[in-house]
Image (cartoon, rainbow, N blue to C red):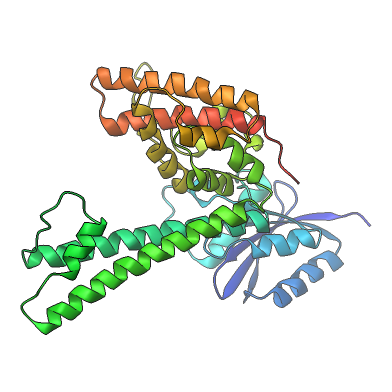
Length: 369
């Protein structure tokens, strides 16, 4: 029996899945199947019904907070499925109606037309490492907020540390000797101090687990290799590898730069060429980590003892590429600052070129399947 191609658009929410169907062909019927619970048993019944009618299915849904469990379930059962980037979904400027029914029908129609952009879906192991790295980032943000809250409390009561370095041992000794006007304020101060210490310990625990579990990951060869670059220690390397997965899927380095939103935006027309700030599209976690790493290139090129230890297990040709990156990026940082460019502009430019060297290292680093 001849297979009938059906394009299935799934509008996925926490408790429901709306299903739209587009038949093969430019003039094929587009219809709304209905809404089911976000439950794999109900989804299985629908899929079996379509297959029993002789249909070959091509499913699609938008990336979002519901994760990839539907994608993994469908693909493990031999059904083609793609997760698409919501930001790249074509939308009519004059269309101001939006609901689940219209969304799933639109997905089915656009998928049939080939106008949707699929994203890279990490395997379960890579996603687990990514979750751990993001948990550490969240813990760091909580630590920063806790310190800001403590300092704001001290400032309100005109308690100013006489030393130079905050959060040092002497700073915490000074906090322990503070006296407040009322017992309630003593309790408040101690709670703020405990919150800072708790967040600090949480970050330390997660850092230790990243160090241990990344060595058990299939991404470890890439993590170890890109640590040969200056400014790219364990956490930055784990962030890059876990967020991007197999970097070799990018054919050229400028594709990776564009994916990370590090290329200039452009609004040109005719003879007018207008380029603006970076697009900030794509993965914000990697972009932030690399811009912070770019600060290391403000100093003269050199291989410190710490960097030399990171390069010990790395192949010689990758170490040579790392030194080439230092010579280029340190010189470029100095020249851009000499031309009066702002610090943030310089760091962004250096981060963009650093991405190119990371791509080159990834091309030399095979990963396990």
